[in-house]
Image 1 (cartoon, one colour):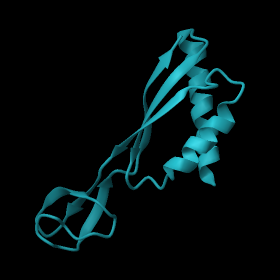
Image 2: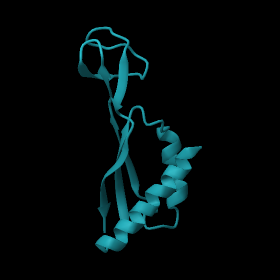
Image 3: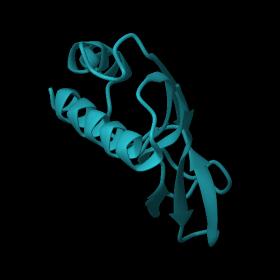
Image 4: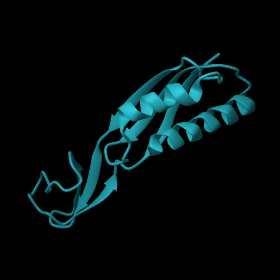
Length: 113
């Protein structure tokens, strides 16, 4: 379950931000996760609760904002939204697509004290 490792990295990032910006508590974390990032959201939520126990983010609310996936279509020469990585182009039906968005995960913001 790589979501635990993701949560550990997330906690490290919050601890570094706390030192740099002089806060001691995180009450809410908003994460933007791309549709193709390979993150199981429920596993991430579970891991977040486990990893943050006893830390500056203990009890913090985790808000997940799902971002759509996108791909470049060689047939219609356009970037299009994709519901699934292997779906055809919703614009022209072409199947020559290269995913170019929706694989990221980033901290949008933290609510701190």
